Length: 429
Ligand SMILES: Cc1cc2nc3c(=O)[nH]c(=O)nc-3n(C[C@H](O)[C@H](O)[C@H](O)COP(=O)(O)OP(=O)(O)OC[C@H]3O[C@@H](n4cnc5c(N)ncnc54)[C@H](O)[C@@H]3O)c2cc1C
Image (cartoon, rainbow, N blue to C red):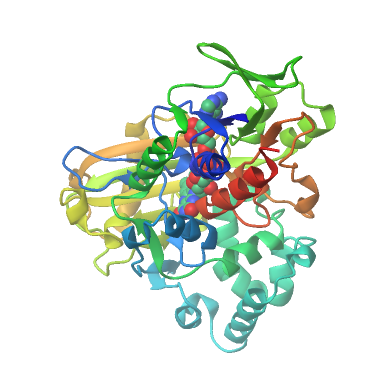
């Protein structure tokens, strides 16, 4: 079959891999001038490794992603350091990336709260019954079982940071279950960065006969009289037997307005948040303790959610000796951070770096990059499994696989691989 794939992110590349193995003819259309989608990276000419536009790593539990890398024979190019994640409490930061370190965290108080916290964590890790958990919000479930104190100290800041005040109390408990279940303290990347992986994967696929067209946004997808699909590209129309779209639900709705009303409504009712990530190359290490990931509570006055010192995870040697910091946040797309200039964002964000290291001065900053995306984090409400659109759309031959459909898992490249396998299994028939 002649199959088109819209998007050369991890899902699009993986689906191409599966479908070319079955002997189909594959063309990937990618709007950007690079492959890798949200997991893409950038580098300066004197760096050996790239760094992701939006901080990325893999967990040791990412079976689909690690399985794909293994199948490609590239497992020797994986690295899995063990960086330290910390939480804020009364102006100080404490390690918080394992049950023992969490039990030492003073924000939880002592005694009964700690025991409850430990038991709730264990219960979540051992259960697979997310279907029951999705009936409750994180807020109501955690307050009931972990208690107000533990919830307000640990999970509430995370949920508010991730989903904002608007959605924080509506997110369902299956989301938290998936987060706690699928994470490991060791964090992985590919030698050279995620972009090196995507470039190597794209080159491999081209070698197998996949056509990858960059700078090629698809404008519309329509059913044609020959029982095929007509894709409108910037260079005219092209006809395919089948098509897989890997973009956001709202873009899918715009690309294929012929979809029946019920499916279209389902796409448009899905909610998601955008992300704003500022990367700074600085002269000196910021966290003297060598901490990697700082969860920053907005209530304590931090202007963004996560501070990530990338070079406390990977050596500055890979980045021309620079120390790299990410300052990131998830926000509704009408938030002012989507409009402000890079200079203004730097002016807003950098004063809080002195709260991590009082010696920090604005002249430490050697270079800065600002990346924003409107589609970064799907929002799962109560009983969200009912809202997930089918991969097989009602238009024959048209398939859809996005971050919004990997539920109950939270979005991630591992689940992009998994959903791409599922889509590719349904296709080519
Ligand atoms: C801030 C942030 C942090 C994250 N951290 C992690 C992490 O640590 N670990 C992890 O595994 N995952 C992480 N993720 C999630 C991960 O990036 C995604 O789950 C994954 O990259 C999604 O892949 P995808 O192929 O489904 O979609 P995308 O990467 O979005 O790919 C879709 C592609 O379609 C293209 N496209 C869109 N419209 C068109 C069009 N009209 N025509 C042609 N092409 C089009 C886009 O340019 C894009 O390349 C993070 C995401 C964000 C935003």
